[in-house]
Length: 427
Ligand SMILES: [Zn+2]
Image (cartoon, rainbow, N blue to C red; front, side, top):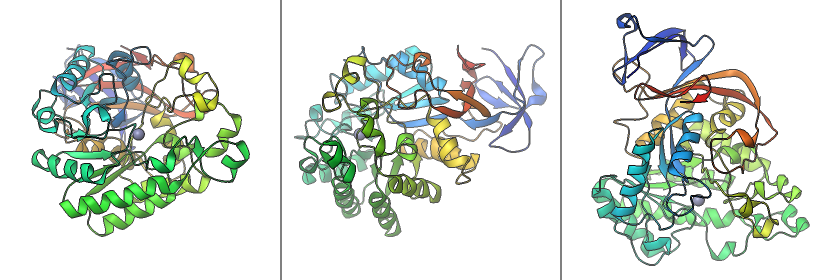
């Protein structure tokens, strides 16, 4: 185990100080051993290791798109020390056996802690509940359950799932998409979808499910999390539900904060995502909701796809975008450089709050302070870079930011005091 003495670092943007990472925890720099490796962090901001509540690692089953190893390498490069791996793998993570397999693969890879998400229904088919209790009791200790990629559209199943997870303090993370309203849908429904001849995806398809689910969560007294909120109306509904005291949390994705539906006019499927890119007014409402706490967290919805699933005509292409390695830069551009959030606000939304929602805040989402686990990221907000898909650690290349200049750069990531990234390079 190496010891690191990080000098002149600005924790959450505060006055520069020194940090010692020793024995897996943050320690008093006065105790630094003579052989500690010194990292000059002048000009860098230290944030707690980022926690993603919504990552697709694709393993098992689609190792041509991503593996647990490559996905967690991308996570480390993006400043993450923990990711929640979505259940829509092949086979689906709907049993203790599959979630334990994913959890074990994460431990073996060692770049980032992997917390498997369990499916709500068997095979994410939406017909009967999966063995939620067995997944909760497994070595993976699953607390987040989601059919993400599909909506739990049956109200009775959703009610039962919300009731069931209360027994072990779990949460149902809903992919809010009314299926009948989005059959064959390709992009945000509006004037542009009509002009482009692409089937529209109405905002109400998302909002109707969120409205139903916050009422169900209130009725059964359970905890609901809403994945990838994409419309201004959804933000309003969640604000209303929180005002009523409903135990609901919500996430926004970096691409919905920055990108808008007019990109579909390129017909380039790299901009095809579920839920779709929305209007500038929607993106503005998401940024405002994230700033005022209506939206609790940023989650990446990192969704790798091999080129044959993306380099085709729009209607045939898969939904989804890479996100882990660019999330912090996009949040800096949309939220920090605009004055909507300070670095403490970023730490809350990208580390503390997602760790609390996922019930892993005994280990992750902790302050960068003496005695705490040494999970942290050193970030250079003054850097600029042009995104090159060839440089990603992911197995896939489907980043919507290719060729764009984004602010900031992850200089180092530490997991339990060991560098997974140093000098911007994977260790
Ligand atoms: Zn989803």
